[in-house]
Image 1 (tube, rainbow, N blue to C red):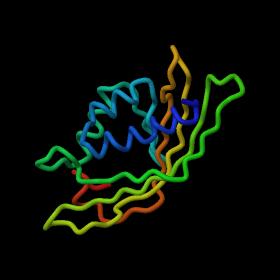
Image 2 (cartoon, rainbow, N blue to C red; image 1 turned 45 degrees about the horizontal axis):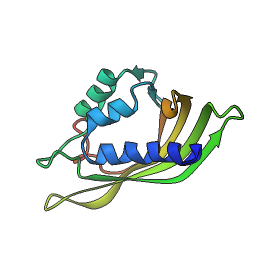
Image 3 (spheres, rainbow, N blue to C red; image 1 turned 135 degrees about the vertical axis):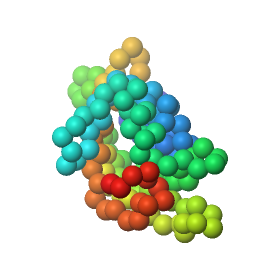
Image 4 (cartoon, rainbow, N blue to C red; image 1 turned 120 degrees about the horizontal axis):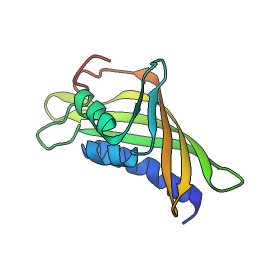
Length: 146
């Protein structure tokens, strides 16, 4: 598999883990990364802090999932000449629905700007920067106001 394919798989795995409600898995994927959000001064590092963020902000339902689908598109990956560092930019659109309670709709959309490094034979995230471009009704998705 090419470096570009491996990095794209990491991006898609992140979306899959969130949609499964696997916040420990998200934290593991980001275990070497710094997580930042556009417009906020704080940065999160370490699996415990990252898992705590997702657990405290994202509502999970009886089936253990947040009842979302993170649709990842427009993925652009750039690999450094030394093939040790890489960056990516991608779009996300989060769809959310709860049967009988919340009709299917996009609730948030934006971009991820990520950095990666190649260590011990595999790629890993070193920085994930989240940019929110559009917000809809997040009342059923989040446990607090955003």
